[in-house]
Image (tube, rainbow, N blue to C red; front, side):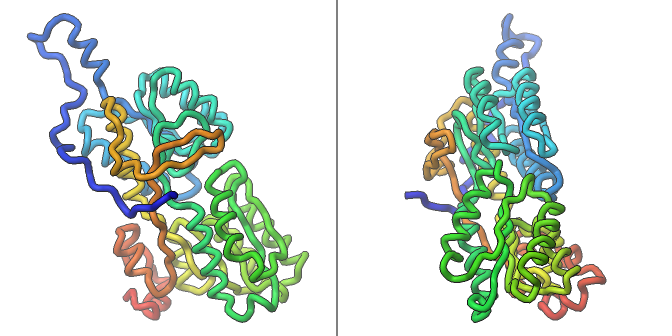
Length: 363
């Protein structure tokens, strides 16, 4: 049985790590080569920058934690800009540079399998980050993705109340190349099926808000705006496109999201989005960094970093940590995203949202 944890204690004695030793003038012959061999070099491969989390949170948190644990570590950063081909090329570059561990958030979990295999064959360890890549992955950290979908589905039902039986909902799932999207979808269906009629359902390539906007506009035209009582959106990026389509049609119905993006928090304050799901980035980033440093040092991962096991799409059993997501609504913004340090009240409560912030008790 899979179990979830909220955090992992920092590795004992991290400050005492002796990493990447540099040869001194009195060193024995060959010691420079030995130092290079012992160097901690980690490749960080993120999938895209359209979603604000990767550049604003994931990358700096991961790099900060690696440097905390291994001050002399070399970090090579890559962003695939939503291109599976680019990410495959970036893995090749990382291997050519001599990276010993890859922290990999796959654009396409299936197509990256050959690259993961190439890394494995070269003796390079792979930590799957947020999305479980196929192939011989050494460790995985993410949130309980099915639970995310369950929370979204339940929040939508709660917001609908008696209206759940009087109309239809539209479902906007994530990219079919993202294994997490399938889990969000399954979790949502486990709650929604049999309790509300699903009038239209879409998978949304590349998590593209523009696609979601077009899908929602099409659903409104097909079903009729008076027959749509709510919308399931798998993340906040899609919700942004959906909210624009709803506004253009003069509609305001319950709408879900995920990732706790700043614009989503502001839509929640205005009442044009109902909830988002926060997956605090720092705990996930810290665990990925700890996994990577341990593996780069040739250590076995402790149970505290891998309390469970998951099965990838290619059938591998992967040691893993799954963290617990949190629903954010208008009533708990201060106790979630503000308390967790994602945003300050000043960042949220710009003049446009000042009145709504005051009403929500943020100011």
